[in-house]
Length: 409
Image 1 (tube, rainbow, N blue to C red):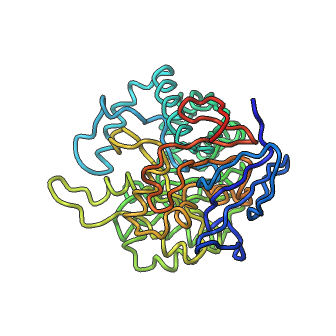
Image 2: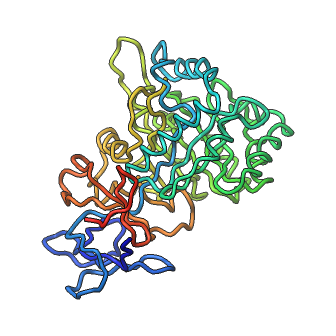
């Protein structure tokens, strides 16, 4: 096994480089990467010769990718339980029906396949929400908690409907179980106009604080200007700052709310992360049988960017009642976001939305010894036509499709 000490000729994205990085032909100069035990360092290529450095020859290089919002417990169920009508609520009904099939073997087989797909895409962190429809942790919480992969860290979010937190004791019971699950376990909740309860939301936040848990919410996943989730959260945080990390996924209603700008101002002050799910939200929002959708159903990404709010794009559901398509490849998610959100330069700007680890974990190292390399350097067509890629982690090359070590480019 060859362990490289560094690499030369890496084309890094502009968002990752300092402002004074030199340009060549109006493009960032290629970089030399140095792998150290304490982390990765990089500098402009100087033409110097280094012993045991991998020559990347201008390949595109990103930090290991992130899947910030998945549902491993639901994935690959569309064939047996498709949604019978368009829209979010019909998909929820279909999944309730499919849950009868969720034994340990079924969950393990589907989740393992999904994990392998994500790793093949270059994912180094995968956060999965797990449905929680009882007072005690569901079987899926245990089964998925047993999964592991040397190239990917797995995080679990307890996804319980908001009404499960209506009683403070019940909220604490759920939070206590999540806390006992150890590192990478978060408290979540499904917050929607159909189950809105301000006291339950407060109980959820207080239980998370009591057990020192970070929070990841399904919130305002609807095109309803009267949705209360994000509004209420902004008001609450102004009066009761939350010490942990809060992540808000979906937040579709912001696109229709007159007070959205004020809500975003508060989120920026509290450093709340927003996650947009372009594939699933485009499919489920404004979904009326036999009618072309008028609305995109996506949260206010550009307005959030202008305020410095941490942002990521996620796959959400893959091949289930919510979304019959999907690949667990963040490049597919990014391409969908590029068009639907009208984002800027794909590699140099928008790529941050699929690999900026500090958006998921405040204070995380932005660029570590865990990289995804795209050997066919083509800034113009990326992320299309970029299926070939490999991981370069701690100086070791891994061919992602085979999951084996390789000698690199």
